[in-house]
Amino acid sequence: MNRRSLVVLVLGVLLSAVALSAQIRTEKPNDFSIELGGRCLIYSLNYQRMVAPAFGLEAGISYIGGGSEGETAGVFFLSGGGRFYFINKNASPYLSGGIVWISAGTSSGPFSDAASGVYFYASPGFELRMVGGFVFRAGVNFLFEEGFAVWPGIHLGVAF
Image (cartoon, rainbow, N blue to C red):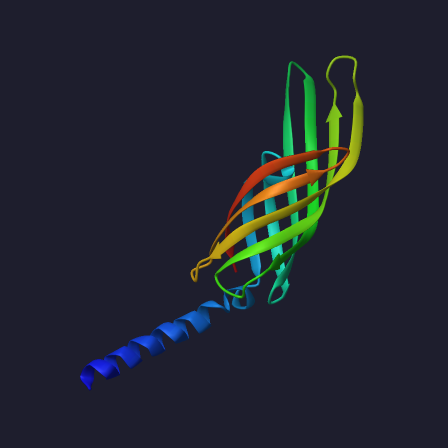
């Protein structure tokens, strides 16, 4: 009899923990992360806001610059899109997609020019959100402009 009560107690605690863990995205609907690789090629700083239990809107920014001896070059990325989660749990596969605006400028040599354009991305991946707020995402970004490129990305962040 004692053993049976212990099994029921353990199952009750485990099931309640699973039910509580499914609510992480609704309890902490915002997250801020840094993406290494990914849709902005080298890195990006990203913010995501959950607007529904399984859907969030995201925005990101990145700048890559350099130069020498008075000559500069820089590339600015601004991205936006959405992310859909397939499972309402702490660990869930997702599908995200959106648009990236890119602007490049240089003052190198005889050039003093700027150009801009857009490309689209789609990214299947996997997210893990810890109860304490740590967020880890890994995905493969499919980048579409005049051609097609595949670029991996890893997010590390905090939910609040």
